[in-house]
Image 1: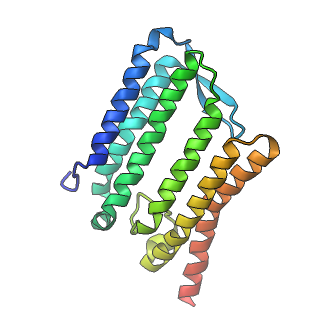
Image 2: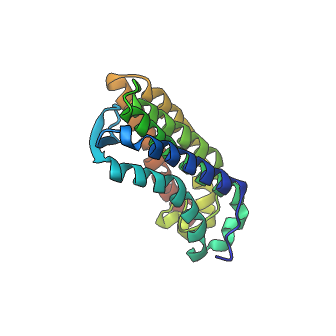
Image 3: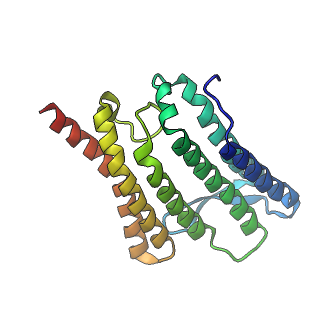
Amino acid sequence: MKDFKWRWQDTLIVILGLASLSYALINYGKLPQELPAQWGITGKVNRYWDKSIAIPLWGILGIVLPLIMQFTRSIDPKRENYKKFENAYAMSRLAIGVLFNLMLVLTVTYGLGKDINVGKIAIGAVGVMFIALGNYMPQVKDNYLFGVRTAWTLSSPEVWRKTHRLSGRMWMVGGLLIFGGAFLSGVLSQVLIITALVLAIIVPVLYSWIISRQLKS
């Protein structure tokens, strides 16, 4: 708790969360019983949830999750390092909050019968979030809760630094590919999105292993 400091990003997270929840509750009676809850990489709905579950879930993810991330740092053995990337951490939490609040608004709007492709917009929004997180990734110092956490990055600050410098680029490129893939169709869209996930997730993990071996040799 002593590490918690309320920032303007937290205020914005709460405002956006309350606004999106208000929008959902005002229109609750007009919504169908089931709302889309999961989309595939093609943008098609894979799963529906009862609105009594979907709305609270998106609402909790939009407000509570970003704020919990601020509290959980206090249990991190490397919590002192968070002071070295306060702004990057706050902006990353804000990006996550914006994404989930957008999902709530899009889901409700779709439920009201508006002609929007929620899946495509959601995937595009994920791409934008990847770009935003990638921009701040190089600033993230070693910790146990946020970032590319492998056995190699956690055991060496130098491996962490180099891995996150590369990860920032990979996430930004991946975000651009996801954003582009969201508005394409067919195989090309799937190839772009899968390529983006490989760049953002698998490449940094492999790179951390390679750097670790190089430093040891």
